[in-house]
Length: 330
Image (tube, rainbow, N blue to C red; front, side):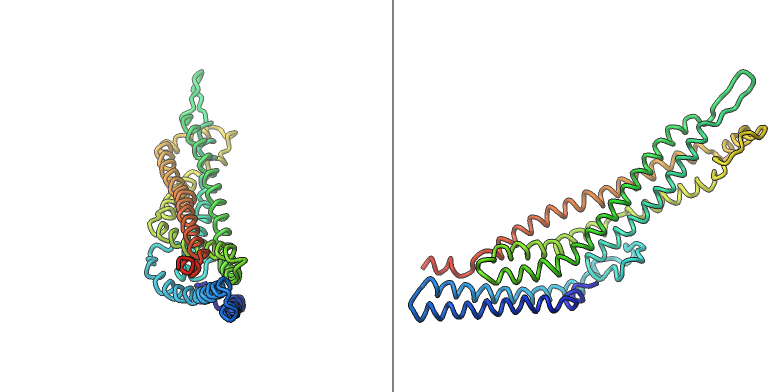
C-alpha cells in the first residue's frame, strides 16, 4: 500500500489531528487577545507561541502529503525492476520503500527455508556415505570417510539457514507493524499532542518516532537492498544442493543386506565423482549465509542507528519554541 493510500485509509484520524491544531490556534488567539487587552505580556507571548505552533502542526499534514506524492512518484524509479525478487504475498512491492523492504524479507525467508531443507538432505546423504564400508578379506575401508566432516558442516549450515529464515520472517512482521503503527498511531497522536503546550514535547517525540520509523528507516534499507545479491546467492546454493540430492537420492535407501550392494554403490558413486560434487556445496551455502547476515543484521542495525539520530534531531526541532526565544531577547 502506498503512502497516499494509507493517508486516505486513516482520514478520520488525521482530521482529528487537524481539528486539534485548529483548536490550538483558537486558544492561542484567545490568550493573545486576553494578554493584549489586559496588558499582560507573558500571556500575549504565550498566545503568539500557541498560534505559531498550531499553524506548524497543521502544516505538517500538508508536508506529509507533499512528501507522499514525491515518494510515490520516485520510488518506482529508484527500485530497478530487475532487482525485485519473487514475493507474491506482497502487493505492489515497488509502490513504497516499506513494500520493497517487505518483498525482500519475504523472499529471503522463503529462499532460506528451502535452502535449509536442501542442506539438511545433503547432510544426511553425506553422513550415510561416510559410513559405507567395503571388505576385502582381512582389510576393510571406508572410501568416503572424509564426507563425515562435510556432513557436519552441511548440517550446521542448514541450522544457520533456518535461523536466517526465521529472522527474516520476524523482521517482516516487525516491518508490517512499523508500517501501520507509525502512520496510524504515532504521527496523528503526535500531531494532536504537539498542538498543546503541556504535551508538546511528548507529541514531538511521537512524531519524531513516526517519521523516523516510516520514512528514514525504510529509505535507508531500500538503498541497501538495491545492492543486495543474497537472493541470487541463495538460489545458486539451492540449485546446487538440489542437483546433488537428486543425483544421490537413492543412497540412504540402499539395501545393505543385498550381496555386493554397498560395493556396487561405492563404484557408482566413485564414477559420478561423489567427493567432487559435495565440496562446492559448502562455499555456495556459506556465501549465501554471509550475505544474509549483512541483509538481516548489519544493514538494519546501521539504518536503525541513523534513524535514531534522525529521530533525535526531528524531536529537537519539533519540541523547540518558535517565538518565545525571540520575544525574550527584546
